[in-house]
Picture 1 (spheres, rainbow, N blue to C red):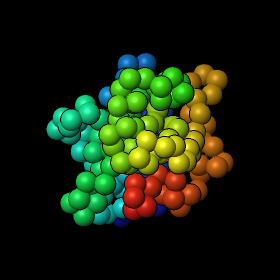
Picture 2: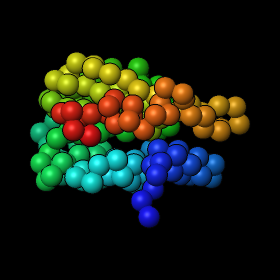
Picture 3: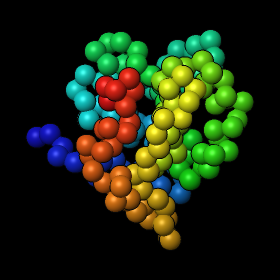
Picture 4: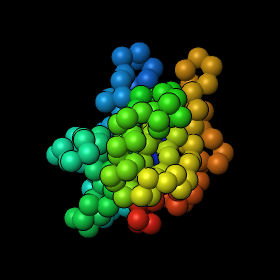
Length: 152
């Protein structure tokens, strides 16, 4: 039976792994991969894809076998304002047509280096609990905001 709410499953899995105290940014990639693939049957996510000229973004997103974008993931809670200004992200934004920067809870979408949209699914609250955001609770809203060439 298909999961009726992949976002709920995603946040629950993030919470489970965060609660161990041993999770790193790499720990959550498979969880993000599963979320994106659950949202669209035609999407394939590659963790640690082949290095490209500008570097090695964490995830490549393909749709119907065609490369449609890349994702750079930072650890949960990493300030994305700081990551956004790093040499790495400056290179990626300059070189990659479609890019998402995420800390797994907030997603920033860039097209040709320009910030287009931000969506926050949840925040880490007191005691390390992930609290779902109302604005990020609508699955169709997430799909609309996590677009790569309007297709994811």
